[in-house]
Image 1 (cartoon, rainbow, N blue to C red):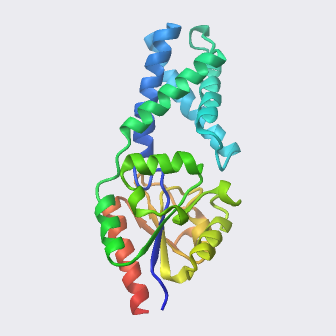
Image 2 (cartoon, rainbow, N blue to C red):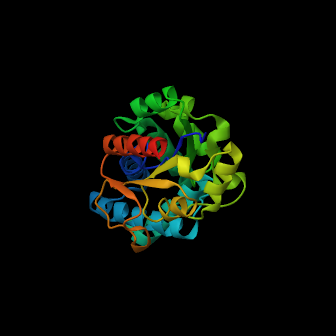
Image 3 (spheres, rainbow, N blue to C red):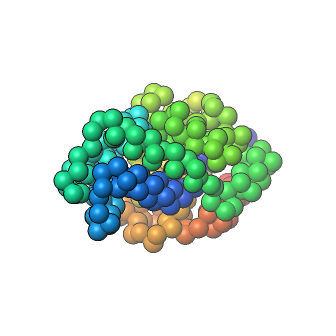
Length: 250
């Protein structure tokens, strides 16, 4: 008998990553303004420059390394691009700002409504639960603990690029997870939010994919008609159960 399972992405899927990042950015810019004396009129430009620098970094690094070092790079690029009052970040202050960002980010972490009930129900039904994420293991595990969700995901059920190669959308990370847990891909579901990293790899590995498309983004052409699109986590929960029951009946 095939063992049913559900793999989840973490950032943006189990919690509101953009919302937490916005809170963290606000705290970081407030600290920078206090230290560097940036006028209020620079703040919108700094916010825009931060996100440009952040996505520029992600395009270069599909699997980001040390989060603090990554944030230092992004923040340095932000201030350089914006020239906020000709302010420059010293290495020491760059590290301080990245620490401010991380503290505010972790303080804002909370799971989406419906996440904990779904995980409880799946676990009670004997469904295997796992996380497949492009983040680093220590950072992502710390997030799961802060979210109160680590209890649902044993360490052996967490899969990250640094553990052995392969970052989403490369299906290799999914194959590695399936092999490690001795699972048949057709028996499981993957839930993710990123059209760039979460959809194609799961499909190529043979999983059914639920796309949590909270912002109404267009689906990439190569996955259209092959994925299950929902706009909220409660809708994702319904899709997960429907697909698991479909497999049981199949």
